[in-house]
Length: 289
Image 1 (spheres, one colour):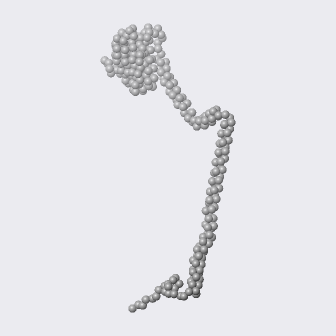
Image 2 (image 1 turned 60 degrees about the horizontal axis):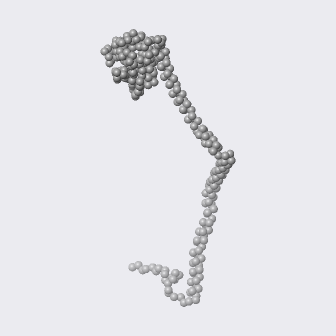
Image 3 (image 1 turned 90 degrees about the horizontal axis):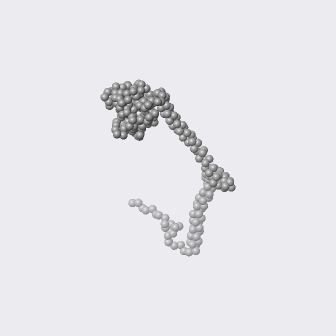
């Protein structure tokens, strides 16, 4: 099959796919230059005649298809294949413009619901036009087979995405056990068997010490609770002895002072010098007028 038309560049944007298409020197630029080949395309895809075409001489593409740019026909063939897949939604926009007439370069802009689907449909449309405007040595294209291939391509990609999501979710569930296993294996690999045994023994000793401290803490808590209950009864008796001793000291002091005062009175002459035991210090009543 002669390669009359080829795709030179594809740019995928947020909403559109823009393709630069090159026509060889032997390729017709207008559909009217090879009316028989154009009719083959319209027979393979009868839905083309019903396409709306707002940028040409008539509102329906079927009325201008026999005398328009072959690049314009390529645009509508791509849109028709997209519509037949039932995967592109409402693909209602497309635009074809001449970039370089000398080199035969055209720019085709297509609405892009799925970049893979649109690019594959454009590639299939190029293959169809190469067959139609070539020497037709190959058998007639099977449009149903082409559309089925496009659908299978998209479904296979969707299946791969689903499998990737499922595969990425499984390791997360086992992340914690695997992490513990990897740490243990790395330690055993980086140390000798004696080091591993010593580490295990040290862990066992630490566990026993922790249990002993916990038990001692519980016993200490019980003893402290018992002391809180008994303490008031034990402290009661020392408090009574201290109070009686405090009461006894002033009495003994007063008796000793009284005895010393009597001895002083007997040995010396009594004077009127006031002291703590002399009546001079006793207040006298005052007469009332």
